[in-house]
Structures are given as structure tokens and as C-alpha cells.
Length: 177
Figure 1 (tube, rainbow, N blue to C red):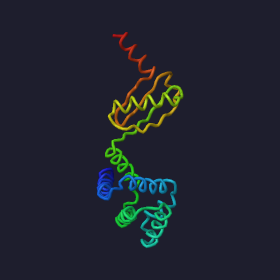
Figure 2 (cartoon, rainbow, N blue to C red):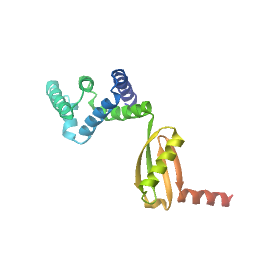
Figure 3 (cartoon, rainbow, N blue to C red):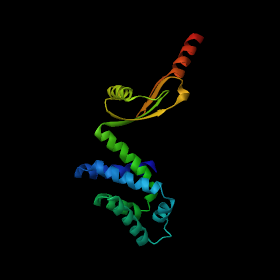
Figure 4 (cartoon, rainbow, N blue to C red):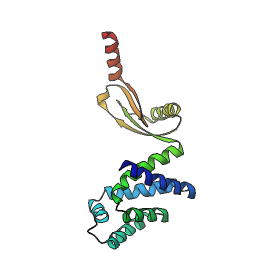
């Protein structure tokens, strides 16, 4: 399913780039995917062929109208509905988000710290991660007291482990050899 989601996301990104609104399209697809994730009944209605196609399209149209979706997203989701692919919308949204971030020079960072970070620490950490990655970093920080000390940052696919536990483990390994 990942390759199908990637192909749909790439096609949607190409349309958005051509029209100059790829960021907006990404937000709209993400909003629809979130709406589906929050309602099992909505997923069932849109993906179950037992419901007449016209009824499924009416429901989809109502949801898209409530979200204020652009015509591009309306057309795209109708295509998914026609091809019984509404079930892969969450995967398409994830792929599209990654492609948009890549195109915009952004990367997400998941940071775990042993203690809560104050705003100046967050700013310095963001700046350091941006320097290392060469991209604009969108950081999410979680407090994890199990770390004992330090931080662990996952930036894109790269893991930076500056936790006290890892440093002690390395020291133990060095002393053992």
C-alpha cells in the first residue's frame, strides 16, 4: 500500500506545485485524514461498497465542504472514492506531508529530554539541529524522566543520542575492553 500512497501523494504534490498551493493541499488532505481517523462511522460509510456510491459521494462532499476543501482536493478524493481507495488516505497524507516538508526544506524532530526544556534551551537546540541537518527543524519535545540526563533527538531518519544512559553504557563498554 505504501507505493500506492506514494504515487497518489506525488501526483497530488505535482498538481499543487504547478498551481502554487501545495502547502494548502497538504493541510486539507491532512484535515480530511484526521476527520476519518476520528470517526469509525465515517470511514465505514466512505469505504463500504454496501452503501450506494451516490450516498458515499454526498457524505464526502459534505465533509469536504465543512473542511473548506479546494476543488483540487475535492476532485482528488472523488477519484479515491471511485477507485475504492479511501482506506489509504491516511498513508497518502503521511507521504504527502513528507514530500511537502522535503520540498520546503523542513524536517521534523522528535526530542526526548530528561528534564523539561525552557524556551532558551529549546531555541538553542532547534538552532543546533538546524545546523546539523541543514534544514528548518520542526521540533516536538517530550519530557522522559527515564533518560536520567541529557536528550535523545530523532531528526528525520537520524538519531542523536546524548542521553546519560548511553554515555554511561559507552564508558562501561570502553572500560570492559
